[in-house]
Length: 349
Image (cartoon, rainbow, N blue to C red):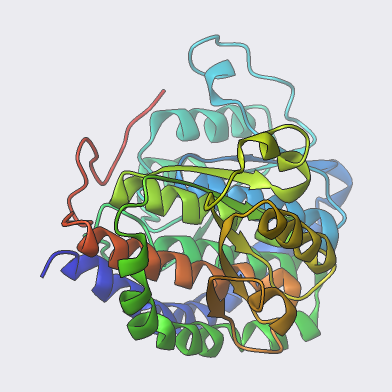
């Protein structure tokens, strides 16, 4: 069946995440201890990433700023490669996030920071890769071989690795207790697979949509859009709910499709108001949430397990988007394991 690899890798996520928590906690704490000893040198975090890993970096922006009180910037790799004008990174912690650890532009950012004397960290599935060799510290995500071009277990493992590092850096025992629930929440969310496969027929002729999120789930809104682009060839555009109201809302008319990632938490009321606005304009709503009020507004409600802390919700919340991408590609007669024009490792500079 089309999408055999993608389906298998989506299903592997609970086991991958459970193993990551067990196998890499000590390493995350060791790295964090070393960096706390240099805390006076670090005034901000810079993160270099592309594609799915860039969406993980968006999550890290909220995570490190909220939980560790560290300002975060996303790197501009062309300054290191095309323009050869790297900024002063001596007071940064520079993190490179990459599934393969092979992209020259991400390596260039990390190598430049290390050459300037800044601490550097690689978060990668390939610790012996060029990125792993370029960085001072390496935190492997242990996702295993990912044969489908569209990354799934890579994304959730990257988010969990970032959350583990954040907890270790903050010496936050309660955060570690919360992290232990992640594999179970992902497993519970996977139970939506049959319903989503059935509901996907409704969207057979879908060719465009927006995805929306805010706060910790902003990056996951981007990741769901990317999965739908890669696997279903949709024009899927991600937005912050706040940004969408500053102009793009004018494109919404009757039956305009919108997928919202709206778990409980500080951003929920804003996203609920956004959902109401879209519904009043006649939009077709797909809503990923644990909250009955948001799900009641949806034409296609996708329920998350209850009780997930908002800062960890992006991990299980991406799963319904992954399942929708798989099911919709199959309905459209596309093999999501082999999307046109793409390869597993993309080398950019």
